[in-house]
Length: 208
Ligand SMILES: C[S@@+](CC[C@H](N)C(=O)[O-])C[C@H]1O[C@@H](n2cnc3c(N)ncnc32)[C@H](O)[C@@H]1O
Image (cartoon, rainbow, N blue to C red; front, side, top):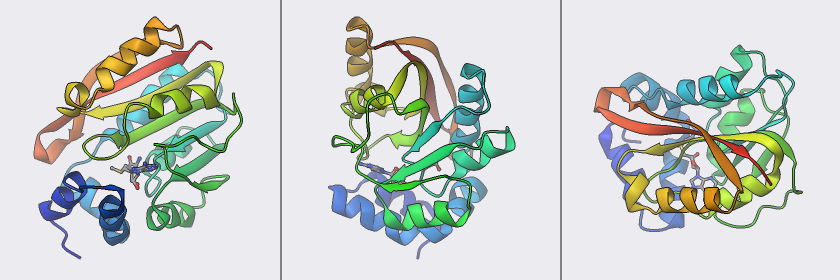
């Protein structure tokens, strides 16, 4: 496979879900080296830190939604969390995450559709790198809220540029107006450091 910025282009310019999953299929084995090593990906660290700041119990039950190869989970393990489920639509990315043996369950599911999970299943959900160009749309927030317990937290990144253009901002505000969640933290932070790309790191407390 091609381990340079063409990889990123392929992921960000995918025209449909099949193309996106093909891009991740090709990338899964090299994802960690490319993102962290070459592009200076640091969003997984920022996400784990944001979640850790919100949570007051290390035994919290956490869903890593759009887990990819498990970079966020690895950071959470270092912080002492151990009850984590992994969810991703790409089987190859999920397989890489499973190899790390840090998650309790490995769930292949599409975040853009209703999830086969009960209401209030998790104390927290972390979703890093999936609210971005051509990936998961803003309506996924509704399902993340549904599966999170009232009083629980949802931490996620939104890649710069996509925040306004992809309707994330608008839906985040709508959900606040509906008292579905309340914002507890949002700041700009590095995403792909070596590429000069930033993201918004958002933390919401679930109310319903
Ligand atoms: C940029 S990677 C981020 C992975 C990981 N969270 C990290 O921080 O390294 C985005 C992930 O979102 C997954 N993804 C994209 N669209 C998805 C969808 N509709 N449902 C579930 N996962 C999806 C991809 O397969 C990929 O693993």
